[in-house]
Length: 214
Image (cartoon, rainbow, N blue to C red):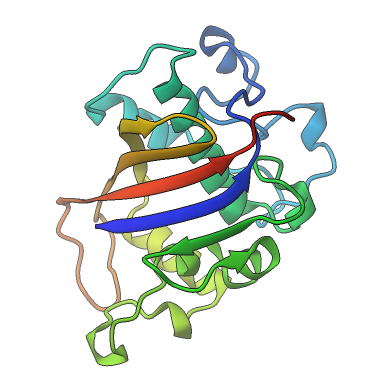
């Protein structure tokens, strides 16, 4: 299980493209701040916006919940996916629009809260997998990985990506607590372990401290 806490993020009413129009316009059905005029000057880690077609397909085929558009659960799920995308793929903290420019911190499993700058510097994968386990018990050691090595490791092992869904929302704004499921298929090698093609999944609880006004 994983516990993540962030504060503060933007209001839950993120800008959106209607689901039926997203694919036709080259947008993403489940994430905001990925395409459009507002991202013309965004600096992307690989020079261009990430493509989520494969992981969106996995998400749609294997999700266990399908939340109505506009529901609290769907808004929280969109915020989660958008926040994850921005933390991993946007190089400059100022391009990350799902969180406030001042005062944002995020911590995992009781670790030290990280600012946007600190989170971006070590990379999303290493921040998400921060641990207090002794080094000898770590198959993946985020303290020894770089931003690029972390991304390469997981994109190689899980070429279709890791899908994520919100299972339950326990409280509404301003302190949004929810349970999530994160899963993918190990179809490539991981740290000396050969691929086995089976599903890897874990569950966690996250708390977003969100603003009530823009």
